[in-house]
Length: 369
Image 1 (tube, rainbow, N blue to C red):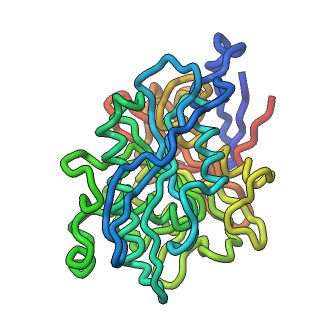
Image 2 (tube, rainbow, N blue to C red):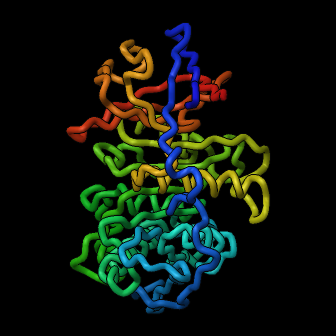
C-alpha cells in the first residue's frame, strides 16, 4: 500500500491511500506499458494515399511496425508524424522510427507516415499544415480500412506528432471541416483529398512533443484525450505560443478550463526543442508518450488509481466547477499538468460509473513508502 500526501493551497493536507492493484501481477509485465516482445519488424514504403504537391502527384507512404511473435490480432495502432518545420524531414527519421519500435515491442502496431512538405519559399504555414493534415487523415483512414490486414483494432487508432508533426496531429485530431477557411478548401480540397474516402478519420487520443495549434477555440467540446511533452524554454516552438499559434501550455490551459482531458509533461531545459535519441531527455519524453497511450487503454495493469473514499475529497476547492465526486468513484492521478511558479501540479480525473468525468487539481503530490 502506498501513502500519498497532497498539499493543496486550500487544504492543510490531504492524504491519499493508493491501493496497489498490481500485487497479483507483480511478477508479470503489462502489455502496452512494458517491453513484452524482444523485437519488432517493419513493412516499409506502404502506399497509403496520393495527392498533388505543387506540380507533382506524389504517393504517400508509411512504415508499419508490428511486434514479432505476437498472437493478438486486434491491437491499438499509433500513427507517428515527424517534424521539420513543414519543409524538411521525412518518415524515416531515426527518432520517430525508434518510437515506432518502442511502441511495437509493447504490443502496439505503430506506423511512421510521410506527408507532403511545403517546398516553396516563403512557407505558407496555414497551407502547409492543412495539406499535411489531409495526409494524416488519409493515413488514419488507411489504417482503419486495413485493420484486419495489420491486426489493428479499428476503434483504437491514435496519433502522435513531433514538433511540426505535433501541430499536424493536433489539427488532425481536433480541427473540424466547418472551421477551415474557404480559401484552403478551394485551393486544396476537402479532408478526404489524399485518399481513402468514406472511412472515419477520428482518433482515440492525440499526443505530441513540442507542438501547438493555430486556434484554441477549435478545441471546444473536443473530448478526445490530448497529451504533450513540451520544454518551457523551447527556442523554436514557444511553450505558450507566438506568431499566431498556441503552444502546449495554452492548449493545456484551455482544455483544463473547459474540463477536457489533458495531460502535459513539462520540462525546463535551456536551448532544447526536441531531444536527441539516446539522451536522458529522450527517455523522459518517450516515457510520457508511453504512459499517455497506456492510460487511454484502461487495461487495469499498472495503475495510479485511488477510490474517493480513500481521501478527504469533499472539499469543492479541489474540483473544477465545484462538482464533488462520490465516494465510489475512481480517481486517476496524472503528472505535471499545470505550470506554476513554485510548484509541480497534478491533475485528478474521476471516471464515474455512468461515464461522466470530473476533473480537479492538486499541488506537490509526494509519494512515500
